[in-house]
Structures are given as structure tokens and as C-alpha cells.
Length: 581
Image (cartoon, rainbow, N blue to C red; front, side, top):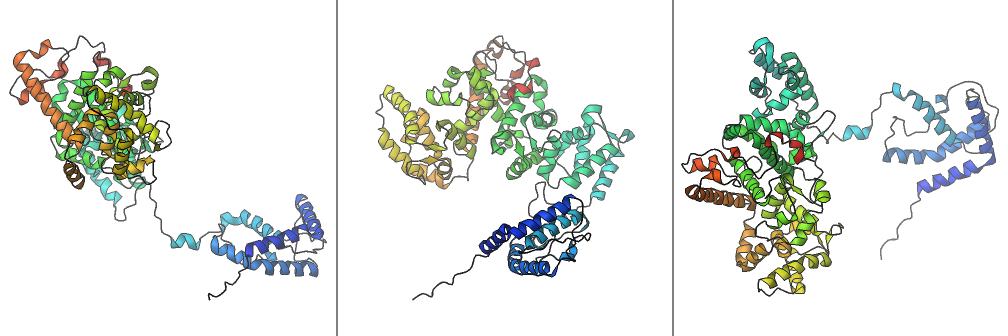
């Protein structure tokens, strides 16, 4: 037979009961009123001269409350450094004595008087709490300070570099040496130059730069926080899209792998726009358009920036800077943008991949659920920047950002759950397309059973974003409901090959990299065929160019130089901000 549990008194309830009894006592109320009158009149209360009955009652109340004070002190350290023992009457200010008798416990008055007194002198008493001493600091939003960092030594190196320049002033051409002296990657040179005021004067003096960099080293302790500080607007602790423009423009101007772009300045903005969208696609996991230090630390973007210095071929940096990837994306957009105004509508986007994507999904994309440009919903037009997100998400549905992209589109009511109604809504159009192709569609009930077995949701009948991220076959799930071509490809595949893909997931290149490599080869082959038949200058709609022709031994001008009579946009007047609104 188990031993009976011993009942433990609830100390707080007992203390509250005693306090209410004391406060409701007429004598206590009279005492409090007299004390309040004395305080309002500016007189001091001297409890040392109180009558014996008052002192006895104060001692009685202190004894009754010492346990509760001790309990509170153990649970919550006093912010003013007060001891857990009852306050002494000697801590109150001395002055005129009071003749009011105390007929009930008055410990509460004493405690409030002591608190009021200590609130006045807390600035004079150093405070240390046992709790703060026992728990070391663990949150470093600006990076963990380096114990062995010798700032003076770094500053002396920087001053030595500046001494080599005329009048100890560095121009933008000199900032590469300065960046290396700061132990920063080479392509941080323009952010360093701008933060020190060089963008306004055309040069940076040693004194101004040293003052800026010393303050940076004392405040920001890791690469992520320094990078955000260098690029962000004053007073901001995050990066927006336009903050990257000077940084990326310098890469276009100075990286040897992009030297051919010097002959095509009109298209610098297209490449920069593409890189910025890829940065936010991979780094900005919160989807709010603001990259924080934390998001930057969790990504490999800064590692890719450092690799730019070592890798002359930007196409090897496939995650952000690949020119071949930009070329594929822009050519796909060019094909859809028939009027070449840098915007496409729903009819244009429906032509992508031979109308493989359902009209219902295209309507969802243009509803603004996955686009930042508010004109998409108001004017029914999709910008090039938004098309970058669409194409990468369409061709690689295995990444977290892609899964979030399509989940947002399919979640019609925005409740964070894909219901059976929403799945049926998209599957209806798939059935219509299959019937038009003389293919008997699978009944929705059977398709639903397959998809639930595929995803295995935690809650029966409700598919969440977490379920799809946990599932290794999210691309099959999405293609089933809005991409007819890929759905048929999955149906014709060997089931065992799908299992092998899941087992080797993460060991090979991504679906997007496969797609970009294949499409780039196709574009090169098509251009070679066109070159043999027609002069490229007679085809104003072709965006292909010299860097393709030169690979094949041909000598033609770069395609960026080819004007298009069908385009009403003056490329010289193109502004970066159009892509970021």
C-alpha cells in the first residue's frame, strides 16, 4: 500500500490571508492614514520612538513574513540587492515622532517604506546577483568577442599600407590592399570604402579609415555582423536588396570572370538583379526582404564571397554568382516577354515549358502570395526579379525555399494547412488536361491516398509545411497537382529509381544545377545552328551572343550589343530600383 502523501501548506496563500486580515483591520487603516498625512506634510516618521505595542506588533508581523520573504528571495533575485531578512526600522529616515498607535500587524508598511528608501539610494549601491554571476553570457548578436584579438596590431598594418599612398589617401583602386590589411575578403573593398566616406569624396584618408575600422572591430566581432554593418543603411541592422548594388557592381567591374561584361554595361543591372534575387532566395529564410546577421551566419554566402578572390571562373560558384545560370534565366524570361518591356503577364507565363503549369497555379502566383512587387497583383504583371524566384522554384522543388513557395501558392485560405478541398481544387485541372491528351486520369480519391502515403502527415487529412519538408518526395507531390509534364514523367519512372534518388539525396548536384547546365548547352547548340543558317544580326529577338559564339570558334559581337526594335525600353535609362519595388 503506497504511503499517503503529506499535505504541504501553501505559503503564499497564508501570507496573502494574513495581509488581507491586517489591511482590513480598522486600526491598520487608521495607522496608514496617519502615516500618509505625515508624508504629505513633509514630516519624517520615526519608528524608534514608537510605543511598545507598536514595536511588538511590528516584530510579530516580521516573524510571520520572514518565511515568505526567504522563499521569494530564493525564486527571484532582488534587483536592488536587498537581503532576504526583514528590513530593520533603523533604515527609515529619522524625524518627528508619531503618536499613532499600531493595533494590527504592520510589517507590510515597513517593507514598502524600506523599498521606497532603497529605491532612492540604489544608484549609490553596486548590485551583484548570484544568478547573473553563475550563468555566463551566451547570446552574442554581434558575434562572440575574440579574446586574443590585437586591435592595435591590425591598425598598425593598415597605417603601414596607407603610408604607401600619396598623402596617405586611398582611392577605390587601392582598397584591395586595404581590405587585405583589414584581414577581410578582397571584394569587401567597396563597402569598406563607402563606409569610410570614400563614395562622397573619391578617396579615404588614413585617419578617417582607422577611426571607422577601430570602432567596427570594437563593436562587431564576426564576419556576418561586420558585413551587415558595412552594407546596411545607417541605423539598420539588416540588409535590403538595394544595399547589395554597390558591392555587386564592383564585382562586375573588377572580377576577371566577368571581364566581357565591360562591353555590355546596359546588362550589368540584369546580372546584378539575378544575383540579388538568388541571395535573398537562399539566405532570407524569413521571407521579409531583410537579411539579418543570424540568417547570414546560417548561410554560405560569405564563404562564396571569399571564394570569388580565388576562383577566376564565376560559373564554378553556382549558388549565387554563376553567369551561365543568369544567362539561362534571362533567356527563359526573354522568350516569354514578347514585347520586351521587362514584364510578363499570365498569358506569357502560361507559355512556359509548353503550358505545363496549370492556369489555377499561375493565377495564384499573380495573386501576390509569393511576390514582393505589389504591382504584380494590381497590374497583373510579373517582373524579372519575381521570375527568378519562379523559375528556380519550378525547376527544383526539393529546397526549403521552393517548398515554401509552392506551399504558399496551394494554401488558398492561408491557414497553414493543405486541406483536401485545396488539393482537389488544383487536381481538377490536371484531370482535364489528361483527358484532353486521351489519358484516363486517376480518381481524386485514389490520388489522395497515394499522396497521403507519400507525405505521411502527422495529422491525418491535413498536410502542413513541416510534413512536406520532412518528406523527401515533395517534388512529386507538387508536380502531381499543377505540372502535367513532370507529373507524367514521374508516373513513367521506375519506382526503384525514385527510391535511389531519395537515398542519394544531397550527394549529387541539385536539380536546379542540372537544369541550368542542360539548358545552357541547349542554348549554345541552338545558337550554333542559327549561326550556320542566318546572320545573328537579322534576328532581333535573339538574346544570344559573342561569349557563346567564341566558345565555338565564331567571331561575332556580344549579344548584349544587339539592339531590339521591338523593345520600347531604353536600356541606358534602366534603374535598379525597378526590380526591387
